[in-house]
Length: 147
Image (cartoon, rainbow, N blue to C red):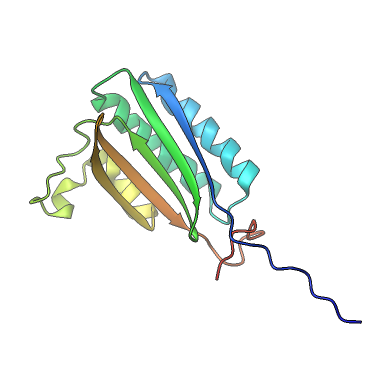
């Protein structure tokens, strides 16, 4: 008798973490993203995800309009995505400004190491995000369906 293992469905995960805009927030964000990656096991380089998260949170702390920063981590559609909201004034992002001119010193790593990055306006000011595409053959595909 031939039986096939059921295929794992594409799973989606997400979490939101509120951080106080203070220097310790970057370390807290690194820890939180490390825990999330450990729990979800997405096929991405965790060191890169943690480094880029630290960069975005550090920028948000420097430019935060309020007392809190929201870190959102999502997995699905073949990627890990991290958004940092509450970063009013990060970069000089304007719709009519070329992307090259919008990359400040704090976003060079994000632009270089991520597969996708960008920014958008929010009620808190501005959010900046990066995405890392799942890497086929990296550990286990974590049930995220790489196809």
